[in-house]
Length: 361
Image 1 (cartoon, rainbow, N blue to C red):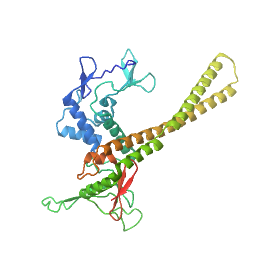
Image 2: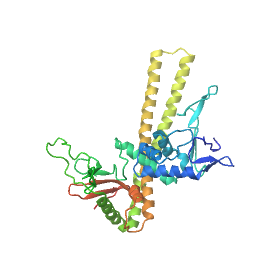
Image 3: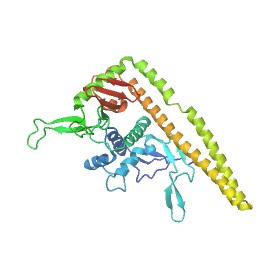
Image 4: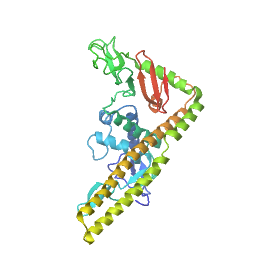
């Protein structure tokens, strides 16, 4: 593992087989399934709905699995090996007699190897999926799996989310059937008897038209936009100060750990006042706890900043590859650049792009 040699459980691992050189090589038919799973997730589907989609279309599950399970889909979407990297020793053998494997939570060394084997999913796409997983988790509620617009449309009146509704659909007559997006809380009283949300419903055609208008407006000065994004990256995503503070905290933890170790050794080897020793050792433990809590908080901020940097970088790459004006709605573009859209009471839509800019159309 220290030499960066990658070995996979090929019989259970979808997309790869052992090559003649002993390294993983891509199985085209299985890689197609993996790419489909990643695409479906970015189109708005959940882990469970992807599993149902694969079952419904009779797509074979990984060897050893009778059916597609939600956990399997989630595992595929979060496994770094699909972008050509490998985190080695995620588990280890805790007992060589029973061969019991347990999750590695720091007990033994792990190794992260970049570009260790051919990638099925482009690193940028893989990272985008991880950010989308985190985004959905932070919503604090299950997200719809029916549309790319799900969980991105926000009510400007109550702050609730828009959902798809079907109007005029009758069992024997579909003449007046119409699909619209409307605030899910529109007819809840929200502490205001007799009145619900005042935001109007909206159709997908209107959403697409307004998106094109907002995006083209944003692209009028593409070079200036890219420059602003780079500046935002440097200012908002810099982790230099955090890294310095983390280094100091790690030194503090190391010092306190050593002091505690010496205190325990002293207590075991010689007669000391137990009350005084307990107070001193508890003080060491408290310093360790506080430093560890600060480390956790700073690492969370660092992850957030690095994630934001990746989002902005993906946004830049996407607009660099686009013409100055687009005439047709593109689902991939929508997923790549839109953070959320607020529907206002007057029907205007405020598009917040992933670089933080907002455009009303």
